Image (cartoon, rainbow, N blue to C red):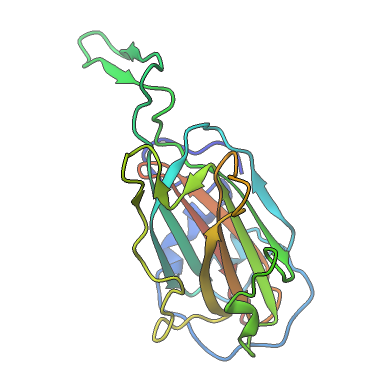
Length: 238
């Protein structure tokens, strides 16, 4: 989807044009699986959001891991939205810092290239279990789940290994509570793991699973300040 814009969400598609139309509540029954689509037409402006069932991926523009801090789910008239938020890594000792100014008289900005607030890379795609050797996820055991999006985010971790105590940065639910949110197609959002488990991953990777009633068109949105990734599963209601 291109590089993130500084300071605000970077929906490279045209979601920004329709966000005001997508703030209402959603809901309704889960329709039968439809063939892969490129647009959704269930609400004002929703048809402008380009989405499909195809894999979406963005290479990492950073080398220093960011740390998972929160995850949330939200429903709108256009889509089910799942967002993963990260904390930038701390400055790395021994890495050269640079000082820049943009205008005469402006306050100099000192940066460490390994302590950026850019979002990590990601791959979001439909996958079938098993998602790791000898691992059975909770999502794949839910009767209403008939399709699973695997969200692989790297370099990222839920444990800050730059600290001597290896602080756990994510203290949220391993499965997000979705009851009462009016999610249309999303039945499960599960934190699978820092993955793979062994040998130690390089770079570190965080994996989430999104369980759906059937394959649905989706798109992604990533941004900085703070680094974050959102997966938008289109409602596709008539």
